[in-house]
Image 1 (cartoon, rainbow over the protein chains, first blue to last red):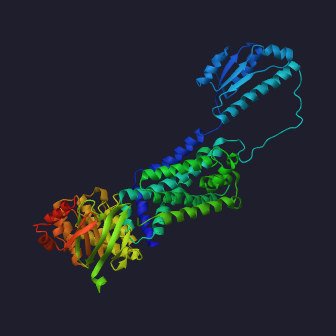
Image 2 (image 1 turned 90 degrees about the horizontal axis):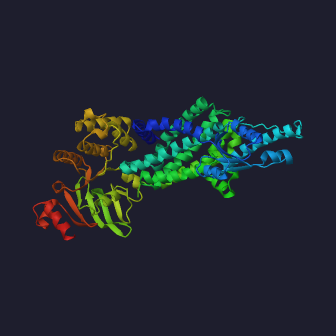
Image 3 (image 1 turned 120 degrees about the vertical axis):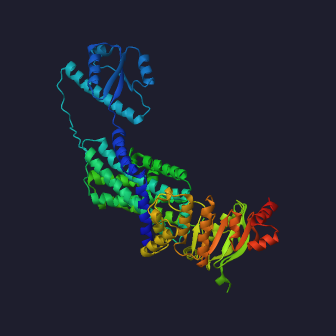
Length: 370
Length: 245
């Protein structure tokens, strides 16, 4: 125990003497939270629409005005020619083409039915379906108006009235959904990178040899390297939570104590992973690449951006060893739903097992003798 | 009682890296309190051998005892009783002199009081009291080497391994360094030292010369010079190194 204290004293000295450290501790979380929370959003706030109006009738003008009036649409061009619309799509000037055929109004009046064409750039599938939904709702709205006006009918009462209520994120605010997840990334990055890099750096400089000729025990070394970054990780979370609360007004319905307790367990996984990687690599570059590899896979599969439930079964199985997925679930449940410890037992035990395993691996793989 | 007098005993020590044999069937012993010079050209296998004796590298085969303990089974007892100063920087460059002493003293299990006494003892001896709170990075190489030696001596090891301790330092500092080595030896510490400088070989009580992973000569400098009919150790060394290249 005394020996671990000496290691801790030395690690903290070095961390706080390192000029790059303070910016990392304070700058990284602020940038991640502010940039990612605002930028990484699936909401589409601006659709560039190109209009091909071959009808030039009061009806077509009404429809176009409806699009113009929508806060989601910007009309980037008008033409009568199909080719102009195609070109705008190819040049990325337009996301969507609305095409109104020449007999649009005539058919409405004579046949009581007419057709339109909406073409959407679907390179990004989820964005396309969203844009399509916007367009449909505007056209539906227009449709209702036409029915009321031309047929002189009053709005027919809905046979079934549907009222939706969105729980836990009533305004469907994307930031509320993202911020708890971004906090998880923050803690993971700090934990896995700083701890691993620290050990590999000692290997590169050669000081680790000097430590290895001492009778220090392997577990003492690993614990000495783990604890400082555990504290920094916890501090990062506190700092990040404060920013989330003050800047984004993110609700924290559950207990703060539970959040930090689970973060403590999660950090054991992140730190253990960083330390384990540091024992199987000899340069910072190698360690960086391997950590990066796992991090990208873990993040993309974690459910931060896309729901885990819609992943194929094998991917969901793979997620059983993904610490980020567990902790994102925990953070969202506790922060947004106010879940209690008994609701997150699965995640707790999974993280605990992963954490113990990673650290045992790190101690086992750390070689004082080559 | 062999093992009482021989603080290091090496029998048939071999270390291979793949198909390359870095150290080939070394046999030697080092007497207690002796200054033992371990010479060889670059790549002769000196560092490999010294790293094995310090427990940093496992031998492929051979029987090795250091400070009376078996290197395989009693590794931690060996480590408690040896000091090591590598040719790389062994001190933390971003920490102060005192902080380095404190850290290494601490992990060798010295009490805080002992550590304080050692710091003032060594800094007084090196006349570096004023540099107690200086960052290592800011000090000249020669001072760093002397400090590294003092740090390695802090826990009063029975044997100290010095791997090219005077590489790159000026002649005056080298001289001072050897005075420190003599002082440690006269206090009973066994010195196991590798060096490139042949004048330093003359300071050793016995010298072994490694060529291509083998010990080609081992004796006192006087007898080696007589045997190879050379005026200096440099002559001895050149004859041996040339004969094999």
